[in-house]
Amino acid sequence: MEKIKVFVLNTGGTLGSVGKPLRPAKSAAELLHGIRIPVEIELTLKDFKYRLDSSNIMHRERVLMARDIAAAYATHDAFIILHGTDSLAETCAAFCLFFKHSLQKSIIVIGAQMASDEPGSDVQLQLTNAFRVASSFARHDVVGVYNVCIGDVWDGSRVRKRAESNFMAFYTPGRYPVARVWPHIHFDEGLRYKDPVQAIQGLKIDSALEPNVAYFRVSADTPPWIVMDLVKSNRIKGAILECKGAGGIPEREWKDYQNDETYSWIDVIGAATKAGIHVGVISPFEDGRVILERYEPGMKAKEAGAISLESLTPDMADLKFRQAIAMFPDNREKIQEFISTNVAGELLTGTEDTEEFVDTH
Image (cartoon, rainbow, N blue to C red; front, top):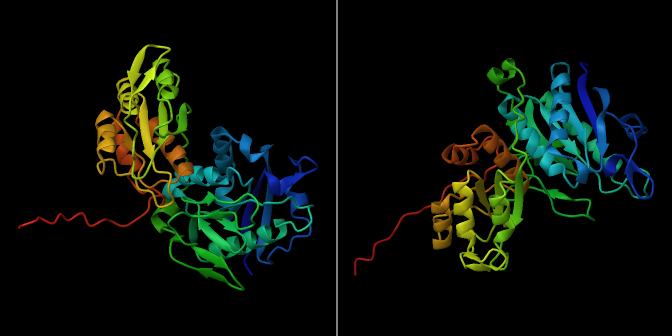
């Protein structure tokens, strides 16, 4: 039997933690002790240079993880990343955008809700199922970034954490699992398969990200100067505003008594755009699609320079917006075009019937 070579990168998180309070400590070799590995798999184990609680992982560490994968890419068939659950979705999004369609093998990012030495831990099941999926995906030429959570396999471009105390911690808004771990691995819609042309061209990394981007949850009760002050001081290059519905930007004016000014969130977007700072708008809902033209406040925001973040999840929006600004720092139209392009399956598909009926009476 020809061996399937799997590269395992241990980055820390609960899955690799010990002690009270939990802290990243165990090596990949320790974590895999006693785990039943499929006989056809040959493992390469590596401990990431920075094993951190996942809340401390920055995008610059994700770039280093991507480089570790790239260094092992030619000699391995599949990759498993051991990760903390709290920022796992951001790491999946990063790999999707760093590698794009040049990734012609599978990367499986997994975490656990309990440490391996805690009673009732999910670590053994997570590891065992990840190895089974990695083997199956390699044999069937499945490519892309995925998360294995107990018995479900989720598309990494839309994966989100939904629970802190439930083993079924992950899901993909607007999507079903792309595979399931039953007595046999069950393949479903949404999997990507090897493209021979892309495969022969090799792996490429597009890791440029704008670091100075901030995320804000905005309602009519959120004072607009929390962003206006950053715009005036030129402290940011991008801002993501999580608003209502399909991009409902509050347009009510606020009195800024400190500076003796009156302005609204629409004015903030206009001031940011004039200063060369890009503002993206995202919906808070699972099936949210930002359509700025639908309501008057959204249309005003668009005219002021707002960029629709379409149906992206918050984790993917953060990465994709940063990458878009890094690629097109002075071109809002190009940023919008990149955001609206489905690079790795991150956008919800389908179209709406916008036919207008004319009243003839």
